Length: 240
Ligand code: C5P
Image 1 (cartoon, rainbow, N blue to C red):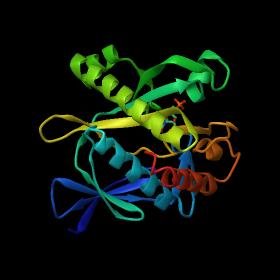
Image 2: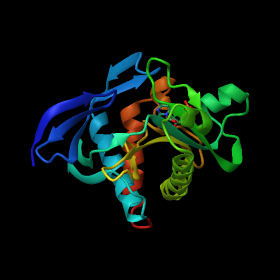
Image 3: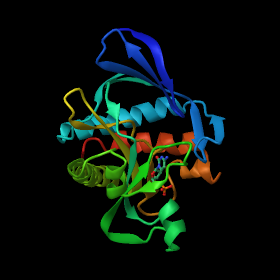
């Protein structure tokens, strides 16, 4: 199989067509962005780290019965995915307060929730990805009521698998963002990426950040912490 034309260059990935129409070739770039793309830096080695972490996570989710778009790893910074129609929603799951939740409700950093919180954001760079509830998403004909329930349920199942997996690596999953798409049969499947770019992870003991917050807040070296996440996932693989 060969990659052919460029479909799109995003903030951290390039998507290419392949000579097999149902697949998409994904290349992870050495680029980090913050503030919805307003800050953009070249970060040598980031693409390789995120691709490897994402491949491990999607392989696990596939094995646990979550339907995903992940087919296989192609190289250190490339993978093959199933082509899907992305639903323009970012689905965020939170286990503790951080980021926009903490700012909005003025609660202590890492305050634990009794139940995970699921939030939806409308994917729109022009509108700065506004918060949207499922009624609003139905009014805009983005999803049906039933699809809203499927997204919520899948997001929570993904959360419980990932929470346990990261805990085995000594990390607390504070929150994360996922995106879903529809395959050619209209089935909702997990798409896009799960990596330290899209998750908040803190060390279970020290509470140090092991995610993009070190880049957002300029508190540490992104490559060093992403490498540590990958190493910890690899070293805890036996128990997984
Ligand atoms: O900023 P906020 O607290 O709403 O982010 C919640 C989670 O979603 C974080 O893990 C963040 O990394 C992720 N996120 C993302 N892409 C966005 C917005 C948030 O991956 N555009």
